[in-house]
Image (cartoon, rainbow, N blue to C red):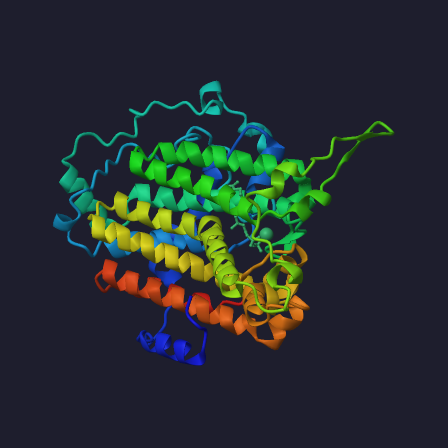
Length: 456
Ligand code: FPP
Ligand code: MG
């Protein structure tokens, strides 16, 4: 960890040549982004109207869609690497049909922005093999046995983005959305994207099940990519998301769970977890003043504790946020047939950008109000989460005192911003190491820069 002084910020900024005329990164892949939600809608259709309603709920409202945007921009940027340097390419055009599970279902509406994505749910009941998700791999969509080289060249010339990479962008957004449905239950959130959160609107149980369903459909789509390395990477992301969330859980959450059940007009007591098993594996706990000082009132291993706390926090941040971004960008490069060095740089780019993204998320929790965020503000502190602004406050004042006071007193939001800048600059270096200059790379650069100035 580097000391977050103004000098660090200044020298970090000098590393980057600001783009002369910033443009919207979205414009480079606008066609692909436009069809993203529509394609996801097809991937998540089921024969159950209420399930459709809930699993489609977060897709109805425009989110930031940073993850798919990154996958699509990187896919495009990788096409600038000559084909003879992308020798690992194993693409085949036949196993990514535009709609792998529900291609026969004509009842799904195109307009995904309607209040309910699935306006006509009853007619969504499908023939058995579709409901069971069974479709032969050698489907009529097989393109035949065109020479591989020719197919790749054609794809590169037409839109530059491979069908599997487009599908990957959709999968990543589905996994992210599943995790948000679950996260809002865990965080007792009542708002997301400026309207009632899934749990608030439909109940905890339904939100959890809808998240599970999205995950299930994501796994179907991942397996249809027919690339074992990518399947392993993306499956690991799902595990990492849970690991990250677990690291963040605290004992206090237990007290806020419900332990009574109404059956008829009778209240039934549910067994309360003993909490005995919870002494390991949950969030890093700030020590009490007694624990962190010795008998003379002097600092006891303060530096070591701070280092441990930051290591824990950054590890959690990787698992919770950066893993999905970095592993999906690694997968993008694998699907693009890149060499090992490029794949690794794409991965590192995603990792550094992901950590930067979450650091900014954590500072916005202290600086923005709920209206600006479209979700509850100051929620981390309420939940007792030790994110960077609080850890810096503890670093500055071992006696702790009022944490929120110390956050303002020492301007630890600014320190968090400086730490985020370090990760942003590492990400920019990875980007330059991985890719030749192109419009798509400029777009990735602009996107990376914009993370620091985002307001929600
Ligand atoms: C948002 O964090 C949450 C995440 C980035 C991941 C949540 C992961 C899980 C709930 C594990 C289950 C995973 C799956 C795949 C179902 P935040 O609370 O800091 O952000 P917020 O302010 O937007 O809620
Ligand atoms: Mg949350």
